[in-house]
Length: 509
Image 1 (cartoon, rainbow, N blue to C red):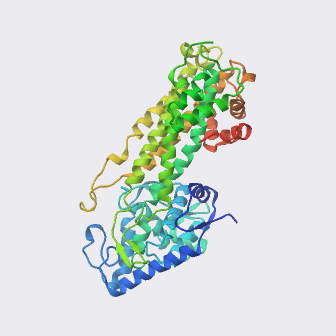
Image 2: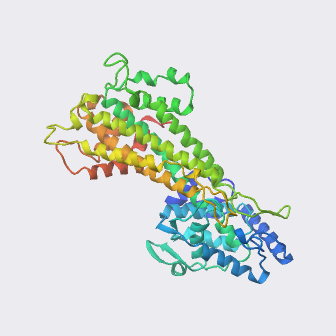
Image 3: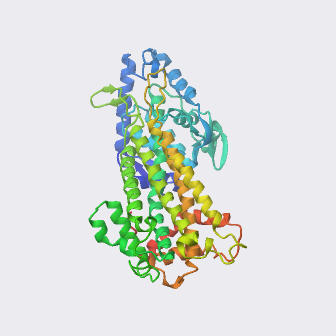
């Protein structure tokens, strides 16, 4: 059985993907169990003593000065969950919900949250048995944690709300019954422990960052195909050029380009056809490289957040101290997910310009819109329009969400990150980028039809053949949206990247 052991400290992005997309099971380590129990014992002790501690014996947010009696703690925790279930919009995808549940389990397993082991095990059982709460996309400001969406997750644990189970949307209680999972009655601190954290925005952004890393490789491949179709000059990728401006991503991209184009008889050297290429060909290492460095930076920050305690208050069991802090604030991730969106948007910006260069006869020297009998046929005229529309949309979506803040909770929470918006926008931008890169793959493959197909580079030949296995050459106009969708699927599935790497070895990321 495929299983990942959770200790709160060593979860990787690759493991998140395995749980979210491949339905790996999870299990707490012995050490995590001990920490959870130790933390809970401190909470029980403080409740028994009647100590004034935020969220345990007080109300929440602006109500932090309202004391709650011991016999009201269950009602307090339930009220917190039901009152925070205010989400709107479409539900998050199953993979994002699974990633969210995993990240919440991992954070609680660190032993700073005071949840009962029995309650945590219910969340683990839901994940392992495929009970996926219906969690609306919108409603979090990313500062008191993702209160609203996480409350929808917890509502199903209480036997309320809605969930998807075995492909069907149903009442939460029915899903729990069908899966054979007991519901829970929350006690002191547990509701707050479950919903006060950055797990939703991190789940969305983490999966986007993982996909962006793979898409980065595909962008190098599609660019290399375009370079060949336009007899591009490879001197610009010479390692000496990049060693004197040693940005890591730039150096890596130049290496990838030469590796992909190795053996090509369609590329040129400076002065053979022209002295130098336009920026979208000549500056591929500089443009792609900057995005590559940004994506790798984002992933480093994601790996920190995956193994962080982000709720409030935090319980330090060894010292028997409870501290109210601000680890729930999403700003560290809001900034990087805005950065991620900008970084991947640039991949589409330059890709669309390469598409224009391919279809424009004044720039390419190829037939207009890459079709015979132009005029009777429009060829690949409109796919470039589509790419332009997606690129323009990305420019709107790339506006940083984290620069906005609207105070909440009667100004107790007077600066918020809007990190959930940052993460969702980066995911939407990436989806547009994958479509644009798919259009470039289709367009470059068509342009190659007018050249020497048998003279392609070692890596680009594999990519060309993969495209041709799904999309036929264009002789006359036809319905193109199906071709675009096929190329999008090739990008999203990483099929081309895997095939190319199988032939030429790993592309550097």
